Image (tube, rainbow, N blue to C red; front, side, top):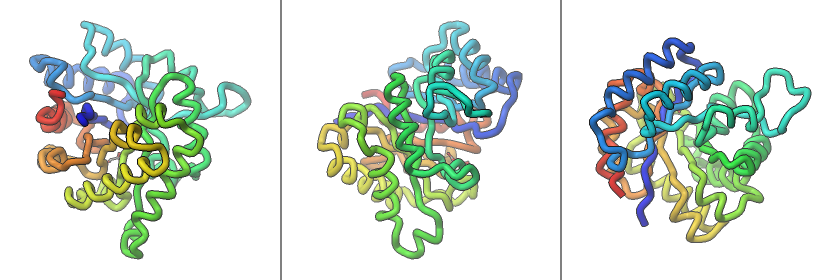
Length: 263
Ligand code: PGA
């Protein structure tokens, strides 16, 4: 079965409003001559404070080749949660996706599997799609518990979510030791883990969800690595950090996914 690939840029804590506009203008320029149907789904996740200008910039000239994502959200609809942002508020910016459970949020902001599950459910109830991140530390990999750790993360993240909603969701497998280090995970190994994640989804939610859900690889994805990654059977795209901050390198990664995109 064919799954439309996704190339998503996680801008992390970079780019104020002016820099956001500049980067989107650059990206639009890079992609302007390519038919949308030949592209993968292209997604960018700016900081919250740049979402408004990003949405405006994308609406200008009717650019429908790039979708917006947020990097996080809170699961309660409103209330006394200083500093948090509700999903309904994020809907003002025409988001298609919200990234949840990124390892940086788990590590620095104590985000737990239980919170990620609550966020995933709330995102889907609001008609947006979660990009659920998972992945092992170097220590877990060396101890040989990569697969069991990721199975546990995925089982908890999708607890109580229907097969239909799971099918629409996205998972990003991001080995923590590969994030921002320049050490990309070997593509065959990344594909093996991603297949294992698909098997986990199959045992939890059945064939339809397992065959439909898109599972991305993330961790030092670069223009030089994308061809080999996209050539793997189960890698449905990439979540890109550092290399998404320059229009030309991100566009090269987007173009690298085109071979699988005309589906
Ligand atoms: P990186 O980040 O591409 O800079 O390794 C990926 C991510 O954290 O999503």
